[in-house]
Figure 1 (cartoon, helix red, strand yellow):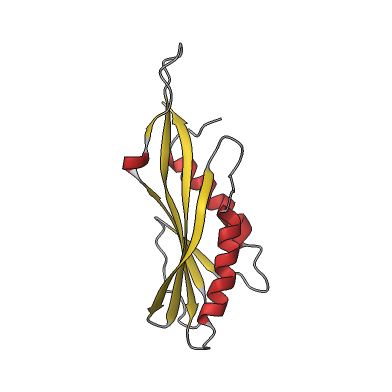
Figure 2 (cartoon, one colour):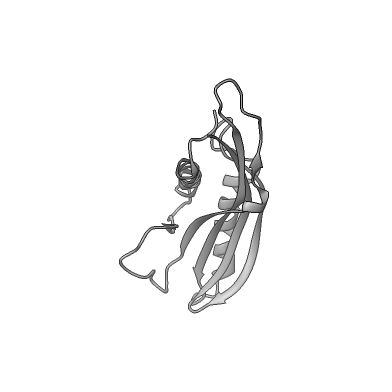
Length: 149
């Protein structure tokens, strides 16, 4: 069953990712969500991550003609990005980032939030480099879902 709207898709993607992210042992880095305001900045000596979902209007399109109900199925596409920040102070920033990236890619490589919901493809790490006291690695994956209007 297609999703009702963009918010439902975002909720499904964030819930899917959070479930897998929370399996990290021994500690789960703090996860921030797009569109939320946080009271304090992350600690410079602790890993953290942020998940974002960006739609690509050029990749969207009508998927079906209107049926008897008058409803039309539209496909939405874009990218989900997990920005992973690991401290560089212990000289292990990339090692930790690689492990967190592996977990993030597991969530997206060939994954779906549920049948006929959000589908993920082309997950890949992108080494961004140092940013203040952190090493930044992003995991980027394509997503696709349908809405009926």
